[in-house]
Length: 146
Figure 1 (spheres, rainbow, N blue to C red):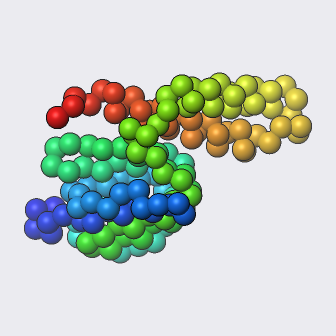
Figure 2 (cartoon, rainbow, N blue to C red):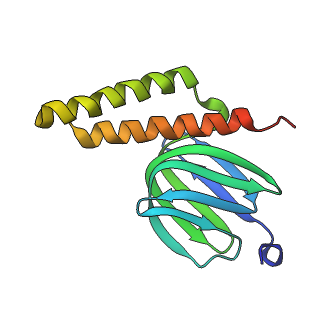
């Protein structure tokens, strides 16, 4: 069915910049209630975004970003994502993401022993973001260069 509709415009915007504006064949994104997928011609909807990997396909090639929080508007011909942050795979500093992962894991472990002194939700979200960043970076490294 995607061929009948052509492509869909994907725009990802943060408060700082337009991260991407591309004609794509498919989009998957982390909704606040779970991952969702969009093909050209999709039924319109609005949703909130969670923390995780956004993937989009052009032809047979997949591309990846990490996004955190925000909103998505889907129409049959366009997906607009207004995200708090968004990083393309090539922008991710792997060593920094590894350090953030270790810090978040330490905070979660500390919460399990000390309880109320630690903000578990904040530590859990930091861990989720670090893991998403490392996952996207790994996919970038695994993809053969054109």
